[in-house]
Image (cartoon, rainbow, N blue to C red; front, side, top):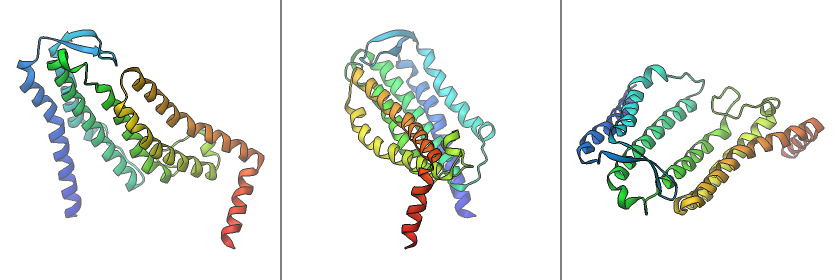
Amino acid sequence: MKKLKKANNMNKAFYIIFGTLPLLITLYMYPSIPDKIPTHYWIDGTIDKWGSKNELLIAPIIILLFVCLQPKLFKLYFNYESEDKITKWTNHYFLLILNVLVYSTLYISINFNTCLSHFNFYNFFACSICFMFTFFGNYIPYSSRSSSISIRVKYTLENSIIWSRVHRFCGFLWYSGSIVFFPMLLFSSQYYLLFLSIIMISIFLLCPFVYAYYLHKKFLKGELDKKTQQKNMQHSH
């Protein structure tokens, strides 16, 4: 009971700290920010849109509203404790990403004359997506049919063997693939970064469905059940 109470208090403290810091820091830095700031720039650092510095207050206010309303509007009920952990850490990760987004935007708004030529926020954004796939890749192999975090398509739902194989494949692909893509995304620049990001996301999202369709065809031919029976016989001996 004490451990649960301590964990809840730490969770509340995390939300309070990282929910209020973006707005407090933005208000503190507000006087030193130019009235006209870049609101959008291309991956090569070229600014194509300008706006008022008042726009910098939008994201911190949204973060604060998310923290205040999250317990009421986003309270989810799951069947397994592991899913509660996934939801908890996903919310924490999402909140940290939003914090870094606000601080990066503040830095760019103040130093856009010099920083855009050597600082690329898109590297961080691409790496954060990569890290997200790594996180879910650890959990998705253990997803059950009632799990909210799973690949629920007609091919995976029609057979327990297909379900198990697709989710194990997905976990391996996301985890090992992220290790491969992460250094490339971290050190790539300009349109190479965009190209690699598209390739990574396409592979991670399309391959599990292609593999599920492949197993579905084998299941229709009866090859999937035969192979499983042979493995079961080998294990029994």
